[in-house]
Amino acid sequence: MTLQEYFRYALNHLNTAGLKNCSFEARSLICQVLKLSTEDFIIFRERPLEDKDIHKLNRALERRCKKEPLAKIVGIKEFWGLPFKVNEYTLDPRPDSETLVEAVLKSIKDKNDPLKILDLGTGSGCLILSLLHELKNAYALAIDICDRALAIALENARLLSLEKRCALKKSNWFDNICGTFDMIISNPPYIPEKQLEELGRELHYDPKLALTPGPTGLESYRAILKDMHNFMEPKTKVFFEMGWDQSHSISKIIEQQGFIVRAIHPDLANRPRVIEFNR
Ligand code: GLN
Image 1 (tube, rainbow, N blue to C red):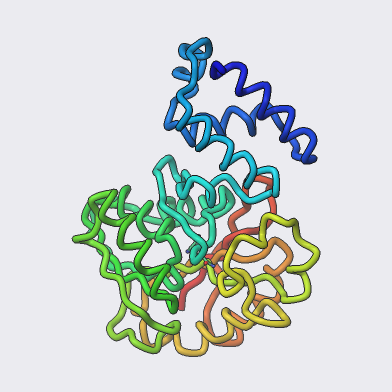
Image 2: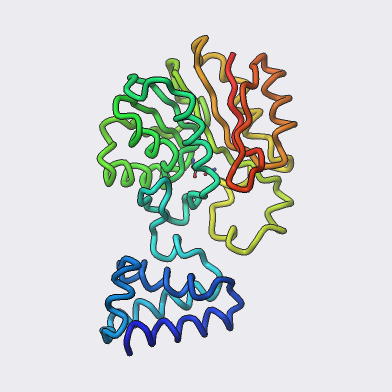
């Protein structure tokens, strides 16, 4: 069977399983499983596949047909143009979260400043490692409550040669942290518990702990904000990702704690996604 023949075979199966954009899906699956670029895919399309590759592809195809995200199947997700390892203990990095990286970068006058950044709930590390990749003299503390997520974040830091500038620590929000920071970022769990059921099947593969903090979806923001003053300098800037319909309620919590909302940054679909504030 050639690559092209397998492509048709996969396309059929994905179609039958009810997936959308099947030709994109089939090509991504083949390229990612066999580690081919889009160009390789075209150049090698007449090449016969080895049995072991067909076996690998079939296993991946079967999982994709059950709607498991491709990132979880191949263990890698691209974010900010960089490859991030992911597993069942980490939230798959989402394109909308690049809004936070962009907002932070936009707020910095000199990208060579030795900034000290705190990332709360780092997961795969995608946010903080993308920032450290851009800010060559910055250093960071990234915390998570989940040891296994921290292990993946460490692997990602090493793969990107950023481990010397990124300390990783287990902590429940501020519980194990001391000192102050120039910048604090977080993409905390924010989906109200009940909404989880309604949201697509692909969310079933993300850890519940990373998706929902409780019934209102606002619990993490409340928990983080109540202690945050102690870790801030007068000029510290804070950036939180949020659900597109939460900007009003989160602004209120932020203001109740005596902070001032400076900006709300829209995501790719032009919905409010990142809130920026300081003292
Ligand atoms: N900071 C990570 C991300 O943005 C993890 C977020 C989370 O698990 N809620 O992907």
